Length: 239
Image (tube, rainbow, N blue to C red):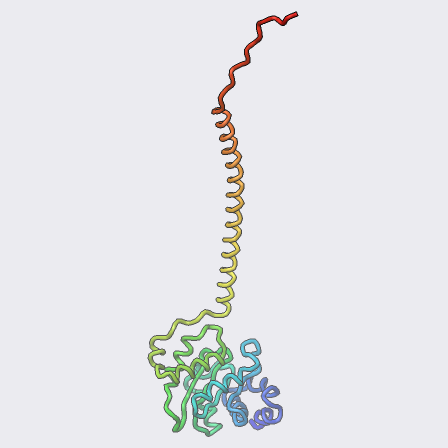
């Protein structure tokens, strides 16, 4: 146990991350709680693709709007929280820190997190707001996006209404990219067919113009009066 805490204190979050993510829940709680004593927002560095470089800063800015103490642990939650309700990881962190406030434990992907409120802090509709935020964010949204929306809903005064009647879930980035490709293909197809139709129209118009011109010329010739044939001079030329 002391070795885990020493790794966090001496080596910093980056050096201790491999130990934190492999440790058992109780050991992980000790290590992450030690990190939270220095910084109330802990973000794992084991998910660089799921989290932007400024994830911690964005989360700090979001939870600061709640105006209550908030402790956030962004860490893999396999076997924790909702998956194992008998052992709440947020409760373990609070037992180690012994600080009242709002505790949020969320995976880098943002879905399936856990939120708890301890002590005499300003009453907020946390559960309703968290449930609504998870329902209204895209499937590929990360922890910073989910937490930002959670704060918006918690402060909106309509958390329960949003929970019961969530807004349509936005498209994921992958879905938006696929739809954009489909739209580009459709535009390209319309342009190709338009050019083809234009070429066909021009070609057909040229041929039709030639035929009409030929018919007009023939009609003019038909209407032109015929000259009488020249009379033959029957008189003999004088010698």
